[in-house]
Image (cartoon, rainbow, N blue to C red; front, side, top):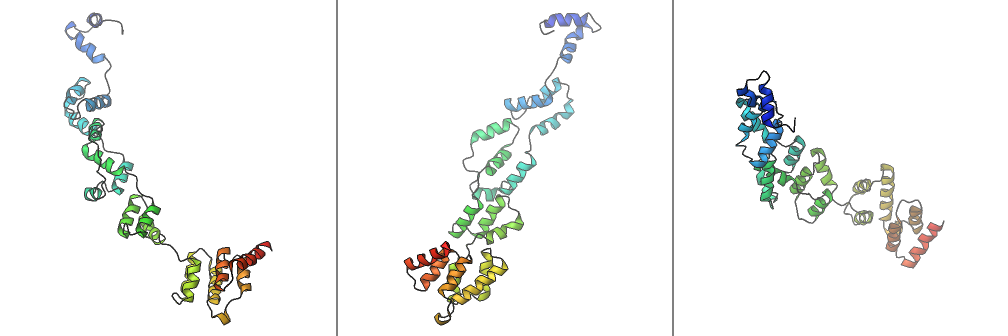
Length: 273
């Protein structure tokens, strides 16, 4: 069949029940034709306005009444997942997107090639606005600490990172650094924080309530006047029981006037035991 000339095929058709005047029409009707999707894809590449689409569709038997339907469906709407990404990246709020420079460096060729895929200029711009990489939450926290951004801008970043609203303010709360354990002791001794705040500060360090109470008692005892102060033995016992770290024990001994050599000797003796 593939090697047979059209003239011979038409001749054979005419020898059947088909009138010779309609043999060519019959041949055109039985030949395989592209699917409508393939025709649309081809026409988009040739002319995104789809000016020739009605003629092409008619040749494969599409009723003219349905031409507007095929033309409308030729222009794509992105998948829902992409639309959601665009929404959280402010692609549907052009004023905000422009503020963040999300349309900058938009390449003209992107519009051309996107149209060939059935995407309008508006959709290609939204894709571009949503494609940028974002700072991590930790980078956002650091920018907040340095005064580069404010809390509202940090919240916008967390939103763009798809952080659920319930968690945003909670993440912001832990963005701030805690008081160190040395700071807690010294601030309590100076009267800057209360005993209750000492306890809360140790809870924030991850101590369970029982150990946070112990650490609070230890801090209160440490901060007492010299005549009622904790002893070196108390400090070494606390270090031995891992209530405080080696660095903290060394700092406490230094506060009591011990030189570095003596501190190291006492702490190594505890380690050896």
